[in-house]
Length: 252
Image (cartoon, rainbow, N blue to C red; front, top):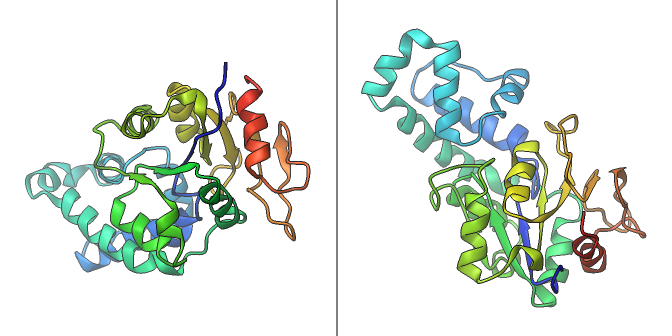
């Protein structure tokens, strides 16, 4: 049986903020320019590359499929980690300018005030997460734990980052709700046994969210209510702790 709600585990990219389009893609292109590569990832190509989780993994996939003649030299020269290091730096510079998604700050404030532990569980690098959270002075103090790209070897859709966070905080899956925006993230959360709410993002609206307890446009605010795409909608248009407790107790 589900327990009391004690933890809220949020994905970062696309869930906390629309970082993919306005942050990561731009940061990759700036890194390519800095290293004199002459590559450009437009929005269409980047949407395809998002099927691969993890920055270094995404870069290798791109080179293998779009620049295969460079693969051997790229591996020998450690080009992929050099690009990734530059990209992390550029993203950290961009992150404070990317607004939080609708309802995120409101919900995290409510959860923090109620003593519920808040986790960011992500394949993103920790410096960029910290840079974005810092745009709101109170927000870093609300987040109990950032489980970022370097804490586990296997990226989403493997459940490892969620399992690591649950173990670290001594929480069980039936005491927590996950919030994700992508099919890859949903699969990771479900594999960890977590009841999951999906708030679709720019790149993920048409993905398969089978298994999510509900699929919403966003978390909602009083003046901009969330809408249900599939599944229960919050009664007042805002995802709050009472709604998440009902999601947790619904049993799928």
